[in-house]
Amino acid sequence: MTSPNLLTLEGVQTHIGAYHILHGVDLVVLKGQLTMLLGRNGAGKTTTLRTIMGLWHASQGRVRFGDKDITALHTPQIAELGIAYVPENMGIFSDLTVKENMLLAARSAKNAQQIDDTRLKWIFKLFPAVEKFWNHPAGKLSDG
Ligand SMILES: Nc1ncnc2c1ncn2[C@@H]1O[C@H](COP(=O)(O)OP(=O)(O)OP(=O)(O)O)[C@@H](O)[C@H]1O
Ligand SMILES: [Mg+2]
View 1 (cartoon, rainbow, N blue to C red):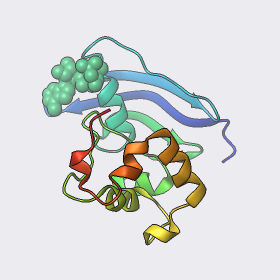
View 2 (cartoon, rainbow, N blue to C red):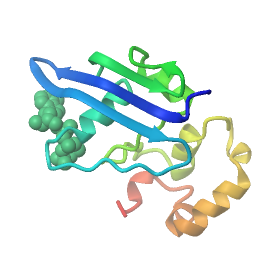
View 3 (cartoon, protein in one colour):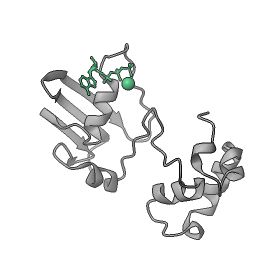
View 4 (tube, rainbow, N blue to C red):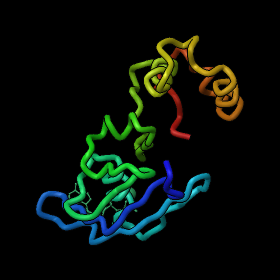
């Protein structure tokens, strides 16, 4: 990646059906920084994130991840590149256990033993309920 930008949106326009929602979004996310997208209700924050993730496709403009043009890629390909999206409704599988949900999200682990132990301990410390409910349906966790 030679670009100093992690993510770049240039003149992104998104239509949802007959509705023209995004009218030319320019956004730069720099490497190693936390970037926050603020706006009033209905301004287009979620639509912007969904367009980055390929859940909607830009009708005009470009989305770049580093140097790579990801505008026309499909969501699984974008996820494979390392972009993740946590939707407001969490998007967890409530009937699967917490462990099974974590395994689905862990990119390189094929079983629970392969989940990075240090990272898991860090998660358990931050969210003790994740450890407590490890083998219980994830739907039992509180939203918080
Ligand atoms: N599936 C859809 N069909 C039609 N219009 C939609 C759809 N999804 C979003 N919109 C419209 O697109 C505009 C932007 O919505 P979006 O959800 O991106 O805003 P937001 O900034 O995330 O708002 P909020 O702060 O309420 O989460 C709104 O006018 C919304 O009604
Ligand atoms: Mg939203």
